[in-house]
Image (tube, rainbow, N blue to C red):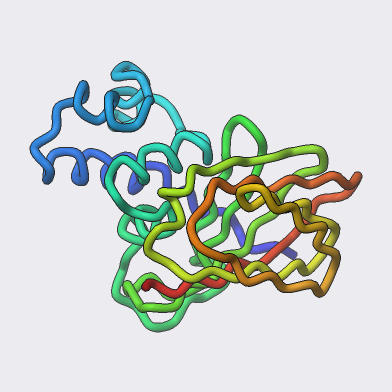
Length: 188
């Protein structure tokens, strides 16, 4: 039986507002830097809209943070133990992509994430989302077509890929079953 989902959307919304205001940026400033409309940013900050993974990637890039750091800051609790039933799970409202924060929410250097990518779904991120981290992807179930800049890797169950220098990336599930993979991140 899967642990219940704990929705981190309110914490993400709050964190985006904190990041914007701590830089002294208006909604217009963030919109200009991220390419996300002021109206959408406002909806996200108020909790009136749940951001997609691609949108979060653009916002985190504008802040100069990798996506995992933005989400980690939103999810921090200071605990060293991460119980399965208390792990935060975020679902992209557009694609159904699920992201489980497996690591304890204490701001540690290593972060483990479990991602479930539905069949036929792809999620893209700008290179700025990968700037301050070393990352490996370990496929646990299904297949993953991973595009890193000009390179494409077809990953199968058990395969592990270490990412290279920051580049635009796309995670795509070409299969008919969900793809489950683990992302291990270490901050540079």
